[in-house]
Image (cartoon, rainbow, N blue to C red; front, side):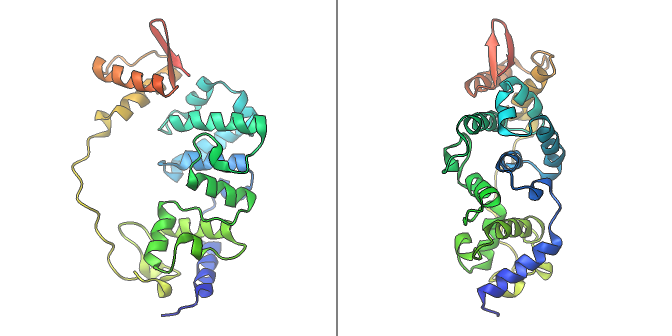
Length: 260
């Protein structure tokens, strides 16, 4: 098996140059635009994010514009993307940036954890740091040739981060990796082996039976000016409203509720 790490890196970067998907956030180094994309992409499919990302940037092209919007406007624009706390945190982060500029430690921004900080840092600011999402971690573990940080090629962190995430999302997938099509199969300790099966999980509840579904219904209804949904059991509605108020997504005005 070839053993040169430089050859592995070159093979993956060469593959990425020809196979990369043309995604709008890959055409910019603007930290605000990249932060928006990273927050939207958390637990949301790329196909759903692309049109919403473009609409968002057309409406709020920079941190100052987003900071000047009301929380209710931001939440209404987020409807359908799920996990509304992400919108609240993004709005708060934009306010910090508009007021103080981009911090040296991006993790000090509201809602920005280690992965998002590394992604924005490498893609926007050229930081030599590994952005380790689920896909990049899977690729590194299957290669068995070091940690994501140790695999980084000198001076090409941003491109490498995108390449490993792209490989994990499209070829080195969790359940059905396509090893025959993988550009780094000759260097991979797991090539050709069936992926390990995850532990058996208890049967998941229907999404419609979850509190998250109720929360989404409430936010969508308030954004549309319809008031609270009338077809949800009172106890489920009350539980959702309590959490939404705690998270700063909904507020109560007398007997009425509104966003933000």
